[in-house]
Amino acid sequence: AQSVTQLDSQVPVFEEAPVELRCNYSSSVSVYLFWYVQYPNQGLQLLLKYLSGSTLVKGINGFEAEFNKSQTSFHLRKPSVHISDTAEYFCAVSDVGLYGNKLVFGAGTILRVKS
Amino acid sequence: EAGVTQFPSHSVIEKGQTVTLRCDPISGHDNLYWYRRVMGKEIKFLLHFVKESKQDESGMPNNRFLAERTGGTYSTLKVQPAELEDSGVYFCASSPAAGGEAFFGQGTRLTVV
Image (cartoon, rainbow over all chains, first blue to last red; front, side, top):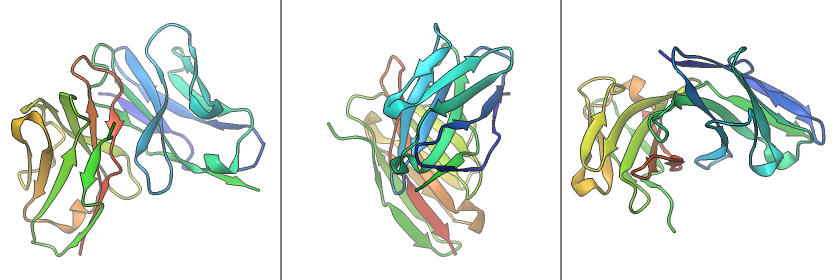
């Protein structure tokens, strides 16, 4: 069975500082990896995804993530955060070959950007 | 183009009552999913429709939950009778037939008191 662990439930950071949100997964099969963001009072929005190819994936709003197969990690990074990045971030996996099928989510990380 | 729409946005009901949540997927999306997030926990898969057929309902918690997708368009999720532990945010998502990104609705926050 697949599982996703987001190592930090909350990450406080000052504006313009770099941030890393950590995600580890476990799976017996190859996976696709995703990061979703939920802004206050909104639905989940896809931030970026890894399906294949380059292990460094760039997403919207200046975020990027690196797939590390040996460490089964998919950490999300941004070199300089803004107040508007305050939101909850979810890491998720799905089976390879079933893109668009069911996702297994982590518990979420709340990013709080302070001025 | 309209996104995934969920109704209502909030619902407060008493234990033992019935509640029906509705999801309108993006037009033309054959795949429709329901997920639930209980407070402070992971978002968990409930079930997956392909058109009007249930492809995978392995995440449905018990037989108090009934999901339907009439004509392969909108979907409803009925909870009858509701229990306190059913409280949470229910998300709906849809994706095209060939797979691809799942687009999520804003969710329905259900509170059972």
